[in-house]
Length: 434
Image (tube, rainbow, N blue to C red):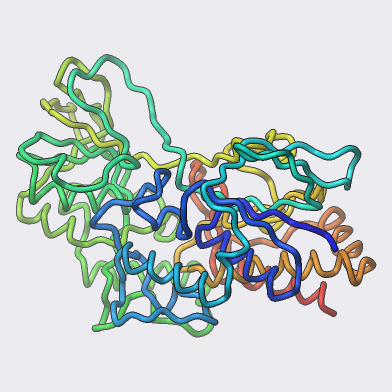
């Protein structure tokens, strides 16, 4: 029997372990922390979670389909989600598949092509696996930009932020207005002496509720064409939230859904109340003073003094235990078929390297099911597996954009449209089962 390793016991690692377990495929899991949940476990040393964090997609569109969440909350908080992953792992006896407090430090090919991988974990002898599933997450390695000049106050990436007490009485600048940046800015309003946000571009803000229901539970039928959905949703959002430009944000230079929307309208409320200000891009530091660049939206630039700068500047992909050549890196991310298979089919598989509005953990589980179908075919139907590999290497890959023209940013390099992606994954799985 072939043996496979799964690195990581967060949502994607648990999904992979469950999908392979269902097919009777031998799995050994590795998790550097003491339990399951990945970043949702705030006590995990690698977690980037903070106390006020909640789901930004609703419970029913996020949960695993075969294991509904035991919660009445539409947008549960991180502690409730940690309990959910504990229950999921215990309900399917996944915990016993993992070796906890065991950090993987190196993967090396075993011998020639197709001979599997040697996995080295801290405090352990090298072990051979026929394949390795990389599920160590996409939100662990902070993206820390460099700036001209020197700042004499404190600079912290949001990955290190845990609770608002660190903001008390301070003049705070939040750099970036993504979902975590807006969450933390709202925290800061209630604790800091002052709060500013530095932004490069405009954003679209989606309320958690529309017509009394979680907004992502609407329009769950046949997906609208991209341009039609963009036109309709832009009008709906304008009616419910107003124009973000009126609150100080620049006008977006892209259409809605061409970057991840911000599921936080509290930030607009606080802007309307004068609790915080929007600033332009940072030009340079000078002691405790930050100078902001001028632009068409921020003519003439500006400057202000701060005690604490919070970098809500996102994360970079990181698979530190394996050389990049084995994952076919191209720019900011590996180039993988359906964000899962290296085109060389070298026995490495990447789980969870998908970002999409509303794809949820079920979308990641479907990715794991496709992996399970391929690994099962390798053992039981090698002709089907070979035909699958030939299609991947000999034909154009499916378009998973759904007709959206995503921004050419590093963080968007592995972004997909949930409907197009899930359709392509299901189609690929059917070819392996036929």
